Amino acid sequence: MDPLVWEWINFAVRWLHVVTAIAWIGSSFYFIHLDASLTKREGLPAGVSGDAWQVHGGGFYHMMKYTVAPVALPEKLTWFKWESYATWMSGFFLLCVLYYRGADLFLIDPAVMEMPVWAAIAVSAGSLVVGWYVYDRLCRSSLADSDLRLALVGFAFLVAAAFVFAHLFSGRGAMLQVGALIGTIMAANVFLVIIPNQKIVVGDLLAGRTPDPAYGRTAKQRSLHNNYLTLPVVFLMLSNHYPTSFGTRYNWVIVAVVIVMGAVIRHFFNSRHAGRGSPWWTWAVAAAGGGLVVWLASAGPREAVASATAGSTVDFAAVEEVVISRCSMCHAATPVWDGIAAPPRGVRLDTADEIRRHADPIRLQAVLSDAMPPGNITGITADERRLLSMWTGQGR
Ligand code: HEC
Image (cartoon, rainbow, N blue to C red; front, side):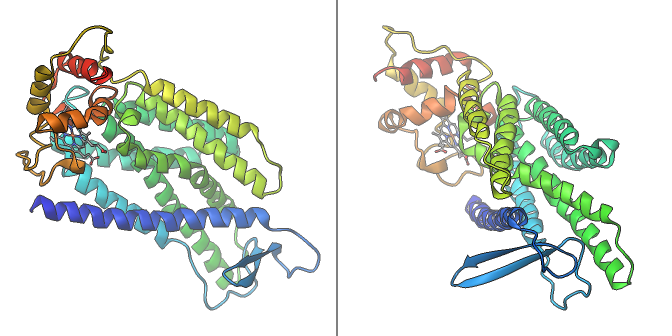
């Protein structure tokens, strides 16, 4: 198929993916907040654990929460599940369009590990299934008796996964793969645990049986995990636009720090909305984490690039030759690289003027990180990167 058509399929599916994700995360935040703001008081109907008043869009809403279920089930009941399913399905489709179809550019980096395209795809897709299985086993073990202990083991598991992915795939592919794994865990929590448990409870009620509260407890625990994972997963999905997040040596450590940052920020809002006070320390931890991430990223790409040495002058003709030979097959008015229809991101690097104009982006993509060339597919050498470093580090 024409690359132009793929480009538009990519755009359309990304549009869908972002919209469904907004709907999913939005409703998740909404319900967490609602749950936290419910107050218990005298005179509520039987089975109601609390109520809350809200005002929105010109009307007042009176929300009540039945802990297990109302005595009689209402005729019309809204289930919240399609936001999550649609987010996962569009996300997986995007993974196929971008990272599987373009595996040689975005998933595989021969300097990390050489593997054929089919193997990279099999490992990526397989690890989503295996990752979910391991997580689910952990949640079904006795670890689940303590939310905190389960969370710590779950965290260790995700960091281990990030470490493994960073040693199998390109930095960009690895970060996205961790995001895809977390997204899969979150959607599977809804599809395989939360909704089925809710259905069992509803079925019991319709049959006149008293539902086992364990179903609700389990669903609540999974829902709590989803809540704490929302901020990290969004970071990981956006990481591919920021080369120094994925294209630097400690990318998997950055993942670990970001999971902690996301969790403590959620914790702040969860506590505050529940009226349990505002744990301001969480912002200090998040800020320290942010500083740590920037510091980790400053270590640069796996293969260290020497920074510019003061006083040494760089011959621009040599720079031009490197860029023309390593970059311009894709970054040209008419790219010659198979499957690339137009200069990627509008960046042309095929004339001296264009190269000069793009010195800063070149530094970001090919010196401070090894994001470009993708998967080092054109085989830029350490010496050539050093030359770019010297040139982009000087006043020019
Ligand atoms: C095999 C094709 C290919 C080669 C070779 C290549 N690039 Fe890229 N480049 C891309 C693609 C594809 C993108 C868009 C990436 C994306 O979708 O995030 C891109 C994006 C960029 C961007 C814009 C990033 C942004 O988000 O604005 C810059 C700058 C860049 N490349 C610089 C370089 C430099 C410098 C080199 C050579 C050292 C190079 N590229 C080699 C394919 C290539």
